Length: 136
Image (tube, rainbow, N blue to C red):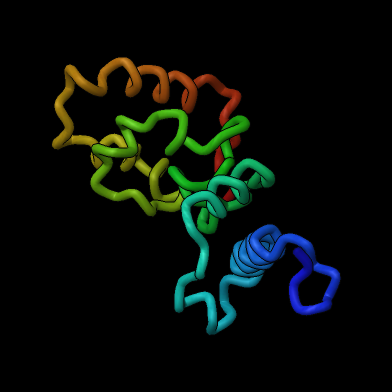
């Protein structure tokens, strides 16, 4: 079914494309006033955006430790859901999380026996020498 005579056959796909563009603009222009109001994006929009993008962390102050695709091909939030679930600070930047291993302190209230395997895997990944570290 065509929408409004514009030749747009799938309004849902068009709307999703516009929301993904919103996420891209928010990432590239974080100082714009409208970025403080949130986005109309749903979970699937964020998942698609993360899958379709790769983040170069630079100084690490913009990239999110859990939410950005900065270490490998997927977000740490998706790769380590138990750690994410028990993290007290889910929106730390990469630089902030890695500073004195603050991401570890964020897990201090988590049941150790439940998160230990994932914790060790993430620790090794971050200290393997392959992790892109923030530049100063």
